[in-house]
Amino acid sequence: MPDHSTFSKNRHGRFRESDLLRRVFETVLQRCIREGLVGGEAFAIDASLIKADANRQKGIEGEKGLPTEAAGRAVEEYMAVLDDEAFGAATDVVPKFVSPADPAARWTGAQGGQAFFAYSTNYLIDVDNAIIVDVEATTAIRQAEVMAAKRMIERSIDRFDLYPARLLGDSAYGSAEMLGWLVYEHGIEPHVTVFDKSTRQDGTFSRDDFTYDHVGDVYSCPAGKMLTTTGSRVDGATLRYRASKFDCQACRLKSRCCPKEPARYVPRSIYEGARDMARQIASSWQGRTARRLRKKVEMLFAHLKRILKLDRLRLRGPMGARDEFLLAATAQNLRKLAKLIPMPSPLPA
Image 1: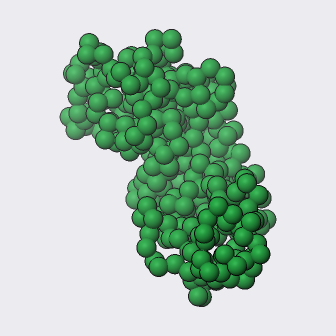
Image 2: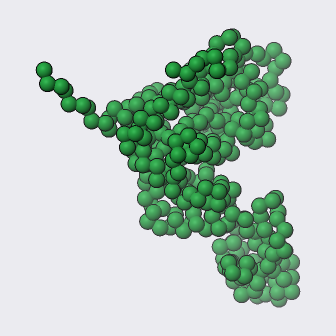
């Protein structure tokens, strides 16, 4: 049992439980690893919204900020995570409404219907037996979920020496930067749906209509003309490949390519190699298999909400959400452990 003196205390003098709950979760996970229930070859990741213990009708406009009289543990924890990339620093966008009772909870209408205050529970699972390898609480936005994915993958590597060869996920984890992080920094195959908005809606040629030459580092347009780049980056991660104005003005396809511009340019991410790898995997049988295996995470979320009844939090604040998510994940792993490990034979009388 950990020494309670190593934990920090909150304003009421009580020891915070998250460190202890994290150790309990990891102890159960270590038992699952010893029993051979964790293969460590392929992980799947996803997030699910859980309603916060905050009345949607008592929210105040986000532009106004918290009232000066707002106080309590949840408010203190909110102030403490303002610089955390999984909470306050995940985005600069001011939420439409803020809850005075739990300001770290995010106002969201992602599920359709009435909006509500929520947190996200993030699961990283091993696809062999759907054992939860890690769990993280974040604010309910996409950027925070991506940060949680990175933290959980690195934590599983550092603490349990689990180096997954493949990561399965939906388009929430398919940004260029995330795919580059997986491929170039950790050598993980991205069985992830690519987040791509390059297709044009006005009927003109999209980026996929241009052919990229890896050797020459140039694009060729549908008319066979060359687009080159100076190597300067836009927003630090995007290169622009431009065609010659002379070529575009005399081109018979200009009305279908760049009717309102003197010359066409094509943006290319510095992580485009990782994006291409993810696209190739998605079109293969491995991609079809990955889309089926990803459902194991969704099944765990369904069990979490329908069987364990964790569709609404009982505790407030980031620490409260973290505690409840750790407890629930530990219970799910224990259930799986009891289900998959055979009972020992009774000793003879």
